[in-house]
Length: 339
Image 1 (tube, rainbow, N blue to C red):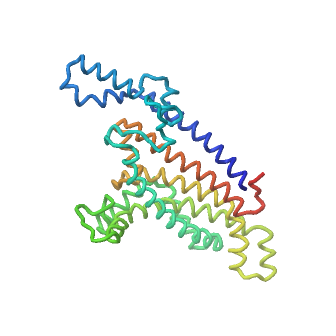
Image 2: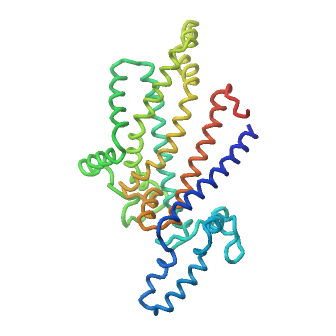
C-alpha cells in the first residue's frame, strides 16, 4: 500500500504540473496587461515620456517580456526571479491580487475557510440522509414510500441548483422570514465571545447548506438505492436469509458492505463536485467563499487570484482521486491496490 500511495502521489505531482501549465498558458492568452493596469491610476499625473519609461521598467521588473515557459517556471517557483530567489507557488507565494491590492494568500484565507466550512456541513448532512434513505428504499422497493421518495429525488435531481436556491430563498427568507437572505454574519454585530460569532455564522449558512444538501439528495439517494438493490438480489443474500440470519445482519453486514464499493466512487466524486456547485450557491447567497471570490477575480481579470483558486480546485480533485483508490482497498480487501 505504501508503494502504491507513493507512486500515485508522483502521478498527482505530474498531473498537477501539466494542469497548472495549461491553465497558466490559457489565462496568459487572454489580452491583459498587469503593468498598464498597475500604472493606470497615475497616468494623469505623469508626462507621456515618464509614463512610458515607468511602464517599460515595470514590465521588465514583472518579467512580462520573458518567454511563457520562463514566466510559468517563475510563477510555479521552479525558476528564480529577477533577484535570484525561488519565490513561487511551491514556496507558498501565490502572487499579488491586482484587484484587491494584497497578497493572494491573504485574500483567499477567509473565503477558503468559509467554503470548506460550508461544504463539510453539507457533506455530513447529505450522507446522513441519503445513505439511510437509499438503504430503506432498496429494502422496501416498490412500496408507497419508495415511490414517493423516487418522485422527490427525481425533482431534486432535475432542477438546477440555482433554481432550488431561489425557491428556498423565497419561502425561507421572503415568505416565512426564517433565515437571512445573504451574508455570513449579521451586519454591525458585536460578539461577546467566539461562541456567539460561531452561532451567528451557523445561522447565516444554514439555508445555503440546506440548499446544497437538497440538491445532492436526488443523485446520491438513487445511487445508494440502486447499489443496494443489486446487492440484495445476489445469491449470497438468499443463502444468508436461508441460514436464518436476522434481517438487519443481512442488510447491514452482508448487502451494505458489498454495495459500498461502487458507492465509494459516487460519494467521493460527489464531494469533489459540491465544491464547484458552491460557486453558484455562494454567488446566489452573497457568501464570502471561494466560489464568489473566483467569480470576482474573473470579472476583474485578476488572473493571479483566479489561478490560485483554480489550483485549489485541482488539488481537491487530485486528492479525491487518491482517496477514492485507497478506499477501494479499505472497503473490499479483494481489491489489491498495491499491484
